[in-house]
Every structure is written in C-alpha cells, then in structure tokens.
Image (cartoon, rainbow, N blue to C red; front, top):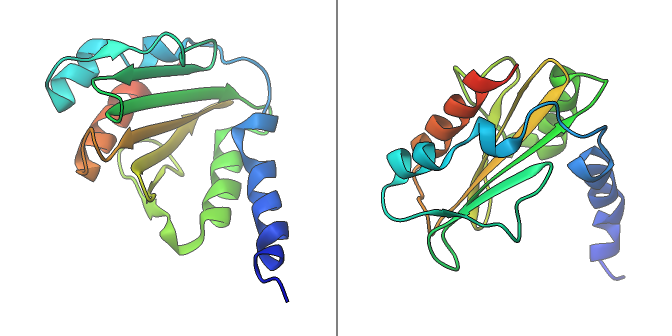
Length: 152
C-alpha cells in the first residue's frame, strides 16, 4: 500500500485551515505591523523589503537568499481566537504556547524556520523566521510581539 496517501486527508484538512482560504484582505498592511527597523533591531545586519514577495497580505524581509523573515496577515470573520485554536489543533503536539502575544498565540519549529501564530479581533498573523536568519525562538517571539502590539 502506498502510505503517503493515508496522510492526504490530514494534509488536506491542514490546508483548509491555512491562509489560502481565509477571509478578506487585512485591515492593516503587514509592513506596518513589522517594520524594517524591527527586523534590523532583532536580528542585526543589512535587511531589505523583498518587494517581489511582499504584497497586500504579506511582508517579507531578506538579507541573503536564505535569510528571510515574513509576516502574513489575513482577516477572518470567525475571529483570531477560533482560527488560532483550529490551526493549533492541526499542528498537534508541535505547537508550543507563545506568551505575551495575545490569547491563543503559539509557536512551531518547522524544518527550515521558526513560526509564530497570533492574532487579535478578526486578524490572524503568521510570522516566519528562517533558520538562516536566526534559530533563536526568542527572536521570532520578539518580532511577533512588536507586530502584535501594532494590531488594531
């Protein structure tokens, strides 16, 4: 039996909870939530806004081809608390609480990045810090806190 097909329903479910199908454009621009000075202060070095990846719901910063910090923002009428709970459940035991970044915030260590999920009201935010930028989860949480404090 081809075992990866057994995971297909789980992956499909996680995809349903992802940002691709989530609500309307965010009420606040991602590059206003996480600024270039925030990134430079937390990580150091020379960073720039990666214009090709940034847009209405994503802001990305880059210091090298593999040193990337991105922030994705969506609005969903279900509300941040409900969305975060669904996504945390889908992440399973890999999800760890991220204190001080709002109710339901959590972090994940993925194969190539630290991820912090948080939100407020109807706004849900996903912050990713590639391991080439920093392997320190405290850096990701510091950046997430800066963005969280600017959420309306």
